[in-house]
Structure formats: structure tokens, C-alpha cells
Image 1 (cartoon, rainbow, N blue to C red):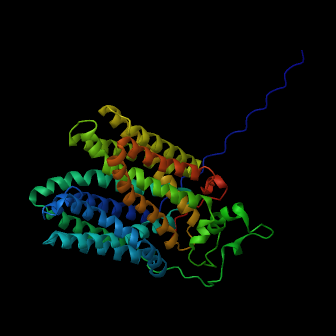
Image 2 (image 1 turned 180 degrees about the vertical axis):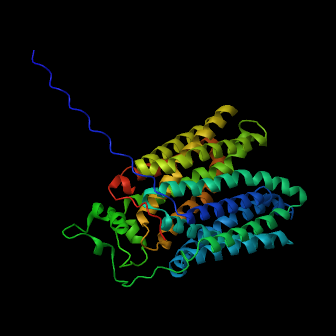
Image 3 (image 1 turned 180 degrees about the horizontal axis):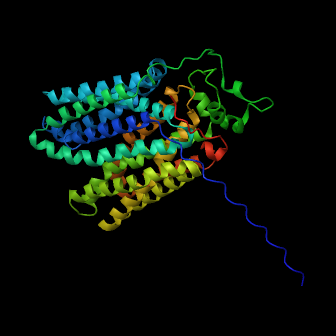
Length: 454
């Protein structure tokens, strides 16, 4: 018997790249996000009761709640254009100022129609500062830390939304108008923090020297400038662009040629539909009508979802910088789809609560990785207000139409159909992500940037 050949030693793993530091401006945006979400939680438990106090019925009460999201959706395209024209910081401060004024006005509303108009106008400002904050995160975060930055930003919102309703419920004891005044004051504080601590970053739009520059002008010599592969290499060429030749704002059709961006639009719609819209509208009814539990169980289910979401979102943001965006997006979508469908067949409270917890984990895996993928597509060298606004619109559309369709399905065919269709929407997003490309700079071969922008 011939001797076995010596097994070659396995080469050592490459050293882990140093953690990219986050600029202090990121922490400013994270702090402001917590203040905004914390204040929003003040009015969340009070707004429906305040609207009902004008004796307009249940339907009118729900319209006040949905008007805010509807105006966010309608305003999103204009917010993208304003962002490209006036810069991120300016649009952020103006947007958050509009929400502050509308919130104060809601506290002074004397009838239902005043409350409806003032609350709807707040959606305009919300669209402006949300898209601006996303653009600032993309602009400021080093490519090697985009997932971590988006994860931290999402976590601050989640924590604010968890703690805010508790405090808001306590403040309601002093009158239903008080939470609106507290929230408006918090928004003013957040605007001042961003204005002072952000400096001149985002104060002016980045105007190109040559508006004729196109996407294919950056392609290296001899490289093909057509086809899906070449189109998908847009982000890498963008990120390598030099500041000496600034580029014009990214156009929608440029981002559309990237498979990851197209998949993110579908994923944003599915997340808004299942995790934000249908979940919040169906959980309370399902608990009472199917599980025959009290309303406190519905609140517990929402809390379980939020706990699972918070537990995964920060870690996944960091891990997606190291291992890529797509694996976490795909697994997150799969978990969210499976739990959403399974909830419709759950007949025991503890099963319902367990599925809510796991579903929150799935949504927490999806969100930071998908937002980081959009950031990779956009890059930090170009303004991309319109591109970012379309992603926000997709999520808002899901959160608006998801409850409507799910409610109709529940009334007509039952809760299993409502949750099942919502889960199938997530499955469609999973199929859209299957052929999408990876965008993380470390995974596709970009040199990570660890120096924070000045």
C-alpha cells in the first residue's frame, strides 16, 4: 500500500479588518432619531382616543392615524428633489420643524377636521426628515460600517418606540393634549441638536461640475458597459470616484439597473406590508376574536415582536458589514414569511406570542441589511434623494395598503387568508432577492474606508 500523501496545511485565515470608526455625526443622528421616536411614542396611544373624543366614529378615527402615512407617501418624490437641490441638513431641519409645528397644532385642535389636517401635514415633514436622515447616514458612514450605522439608527427608533408609549400613556393622565406639546418640544430639541452638531455637512447640495457625466463614463478601459453584470458594478465604480470630479445626482434608471436596488424596493414593500401594516392592524383583532384573550395580550404580542426586532437589528447590522447584506436579507425574509403565515393558523396564545417573537427577529435581520444594500448602491459620492425616496415610498405603500387589503381578507375569508396573503407578499420579495447581487464593499472586493469624512 502506497503511503498517503501528506495533507497540506490549511492556510491561515486573513486577519480581520479593523473596525471602521463611525463619525461623531452618525451619533448625532442616532440621538436625534431616539428623541423623535420617543416623542412619537408619546402621541401613539393618545391620538386614536383624541380623535374619537370628537364623536366622529371608528372609521374617522382610523383615517386620522393613516393620513400621516399617506402624506408621507405623497410627499416622498418631492422630498427627494428637495434633497438634491438644497442639501440633506437643510431639508432635515425644515422637515422636522414642520412636524413640530403640526404636532403643536394638533394639541390645539378644536374639532376633528382641524386634527385631521394638522396630523396629515405632519406627514409632509416626516417624509422630508426621514429621507434626509437616510441620505446623511449613507453619506457619512464609511463603506466598511454601513450596516453597523443603519443598525444603530434603526435600534434608536425601536427603543424610542418601545419606551415612548409607556410614558405617553402616563402623560395622558394630565390630559390628551399634553403629549402633543411634549412631542413638539422634543422635535425642536432634535432639530437644534442636528443644526449645531452636524456643522456644515449636508448644508448645501453637492453640485457637479459637469452634468453630462453618465454612469458608463466611469467604466474602466476595455470593460463592457452593458448587460446586467456591468450595470451591477455601478456601486463599486461610484465608491471609487474621486472628489475632484463630482458627479450629478443619481437618477432612478441608474439605480434600477442594479439588481439589489430592484430587490430592495420589493423587500421594502413586503416589510411595510407584513411587519408594519398588517401586523399592527390584525394582531389586536386576532387576539380578541380568535384566541379569545384580552387586549393586554395584543400589547404583549407587539412587545414580543419589538423585543425580537431589537435583539437582532444591531448585531445583524454589524455582521452584514463582514459577511454581506444578501444572506441576512434572504434569511430575514424567509423567517418573516414563515411566521406571518403560521400566525394565521395559531390557536393557542403562547404559540402566537412565540411566533411574534421569532417574526420580530426576522424583521430585525431584514431591515438593517436591506437599508445598507441601498446605501451600497447609492454610495457616498453622489446625491441620491430621488433614489432613496423611492425606497421609502415602497415601504410606506406597504404600510398603507397592507392593513386595508388584510382587513378586507379577514372580513371576507378569515384571518388565515389575511396572514397568508401577507406572508406570500414576503415570499415574492424573497424570490426577488434570490438573483440579486451582493453589495457589501468588503465582500465584493472594495477596499474598506475607515477614515471618517470631514
